[in-house]
Amino acid sequence: MLIDAAGFGHVLKMSNVEINHLMVITLYERWRTETHTFHMPLGEITVTLQDVSLQLGVPIDGESVTGGSFENLLQLC
Image 1 (cartoon, rainbow, N blue to C red):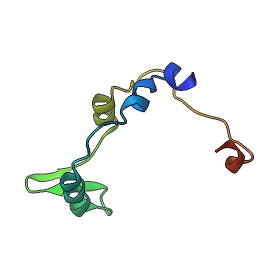
Image 2: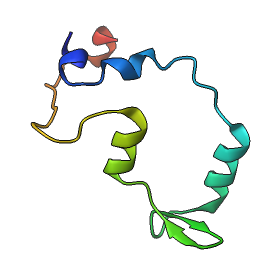
Image 3: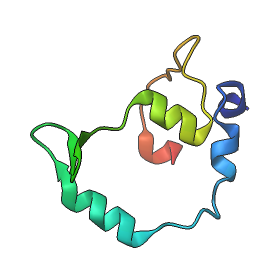
Image 4: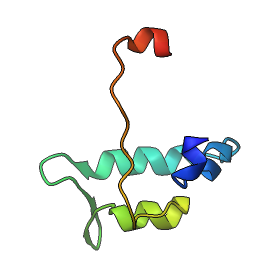
């Protein structure tokens, strides 16, 4: 499968991850669209590509993953 070859296969198996709704709401309230950062009591923070890589275990080095375009997206779905 292409998803496995790209290193994303294990992400599909993360279906039973519990979501902390209070944390999501808090982050939403602290997000600033002007700067694309979270404003926390100790300063600004942002989510980087390296953060995502560490959290999901997805490699960020090597060739980029791109896909083709499809004429009929409804049929694809």
